[in-house]
Image (cartoon, rainbow, N blue to C red; front, side, top):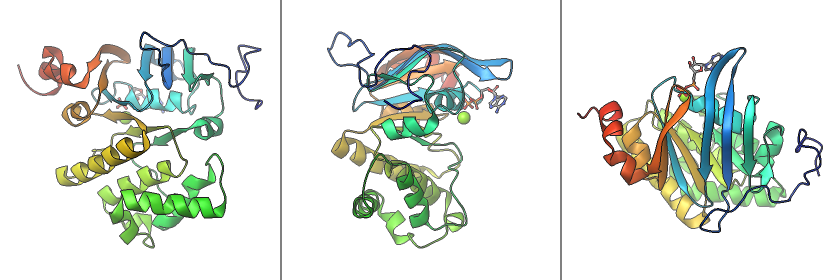
Length: 266
Ligand SMILES: Nc1ncnc2c1ncn2[C@@H]1O[C@H](COP(=O)(O)OP(=O)(O)O)[C@@H](O)[C@H]1O
Ligand SMILES: [Mg+2]
C-alpha cells in the first residue's frame, strides 16, 4: 500500500473495493460523489456527482467558466477536494497524490495541451511513458508504435519540435502522451477548441478506434456540445459549478434545455 492512499479514512486497504456496484452489477470505473471545491475561498464546484463506467464514453458539457476544467483538476488531484469522494477502480483517491492517480490509470489531456514546445513529438511521448505504471524500454518503444498506429500523422512528425506542430497535431501529441501512461480512462479537456472541423473529425475517429480496440473509457469535456454528445454513451451538463442535467448523449441532444441553451435552437 502506498503511503498516500486513503490518508483520511484510516484503515481502508488498497485494493479493497470501495464502490458499490449498481443495478447492472458493474461498478463504475470512475466515481465522483458530492464533490465541492474551488480556489482560495472562492467555491467553484457544488456537490458534483459523476460516473464513468468501464469502457464508457462520457461527455461533460457546459459554457465557458462552468467548472469543467476545475472538475478534471480535482479528479487528477491537482486541486484538493473540499468535500465529497472520488473513487477509481474501486480505490478511494480523494486525497491521493497526482502521480499515484496517473499510475492507477487516469490520463489527463489538459486544456491547451501543455506540450514541451522545445522537445520533439517523440520526446513528449517519452515523458508520458515516464509516469507509466510499469515497463521496460522495449515496452515503451512498443507502446510508442501503438500510439503512432492510432495517430499516423504523429508518426510523420515524430522528429519535429512540438512547438512547430499545427494545433491539431499538438492535440494528437497530447493525446498520444496520455496514452503512453497506459490509462484505463482518458480525461480530455476541450478537444476541439481552436481546431478546424475536419481535424476534429480525424482526432475523434482515432479516439473511436482506440476506444473500440482497447476498451478505453473516455471523459470528454467540451464547450462544443454537439461534438461531445454525439459520440458519448452518456453525458452531463454543468452550469455554474453544478450538474444540472444528465442522461444518454442522444437524449441530452434532444432535450429542450440543451437545444435552447447550447445549440442556439428555440
Ligand atoms: N486558478 C484559478 N484561480 C481562481 N479561479 C479560477 C481558477 N481557475 C478557474 N477559476 C474560476 O473557476 C470557474 C470555473 O473555471 P473553469 O473550471 O476553468 O471552467 P470551464 O473549464 O468550464 O471553462 C471560473 O469562474 C473561473 O474564473
Ligand atoms: Mg476549461
